[in-house]
Length: 362
Length: 150
Image 1 (cartoon, rainbow over the protein chains, first blue to last red):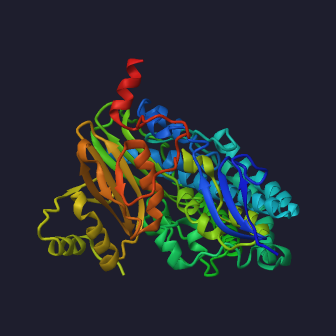
Image 2 (image 1 turned 60 degrees about the horizontal axis):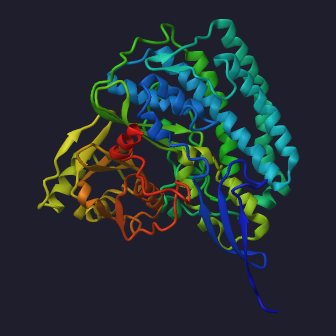
Image 3 (image 1 turned 90 degrees about the vertical axis):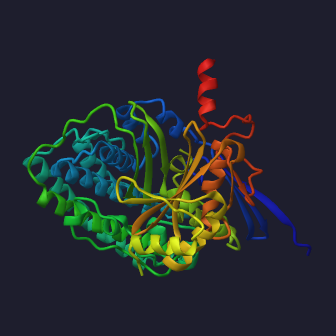
């Protein structure tokens, strides 16, 4: 029988994709021979918009880069502006920022596990992961007033504090999370259907990770031992102890395991942060005008290294704001990951990298 | 293995004696080296070969009003930024895709937003902007001014 090539478009609107991006798969029978990618469907010109807003307004703008890890964006931005202003923020504010960063990591990883389960047809995983994620969302809502957009950062610190009773309540809710998370880790380690669908799928070698400059859990699942919380530490991470989770398999399964174990580690970090929470003010007053200068601010977001470059010309608005989100580094590997895979494995490969298109497009 | 920044700077100066790599301190742990566009590939090659600076976090492109600037942000425990100044009339540098394939995304974005040509880079398809976008370069100062007039 003559073998025919067929072109199958996935996206920009497709039930598999939660956000718009287009893949063009050239398939021969069940095999993907080649994959093309087109992005930009949710490009909002945020970098240009920032040039027309004040430094304070820009906090709320950058929170909208990503609907999942909004807090780490605002934190990285504020860190940069504070460095330009020469401001040292109070230790209590540093701890509260980090607390929310870690909660966000748990929320992001659980959300992702749910999406992976859903895309693989394993709806039970989706149900459990998203049920347990509600606990984290409740904690974050109590802390900031918002489930995903927290608006808790101000230049010079944070805007809302916690008292002792509130800390106890957070600890009680974290206890509720411990057992479900342990069960999810066990599920990833032992569940046969999940392993059959994700092992040896979407493999990236350490060499490929380095060549494509991939970051975050995807890189760590291929054995790259890099985490900016440890390798470029800022307070309070200098005073906290945590394990950087790595794996060597480099497939979708290893990424799942790394993310789940990171979530467990983050719960532990949250407890440590609350136990060591220093007393004192939560913010210091910041000037509206920022002196001329340039700054590079880096942080470890749930998906990996996030970088902000801010240039000030001495006015009330940033002269240039550059954002590179971690998703962009994993997107570029997709055409390579999709090559030679079975058509039925495409959802696993696409889910495995934790697509966040709004982040990548900005 | 990581080297101290002083060692790296000294070695770069020694390898490229014809260049005056002037350094300036940038805020938050970032070291900046000014590099002329025509030796960029060699300098990056040396950074990767000798000092394991394989991780290019991103490239920032900006329009200062007097010309264009590309900032190549590298990371290997230290942050190291290569500063490449380009005149408007000759906004062209070689692509780094041969050395670092992951760089294509950043180069294509800068090509679209600021009109910098990366010699050897495939840029025929649009990257972030719509298919029917005109020739406006959104991050050029000129683009902001012409919009204000409307």
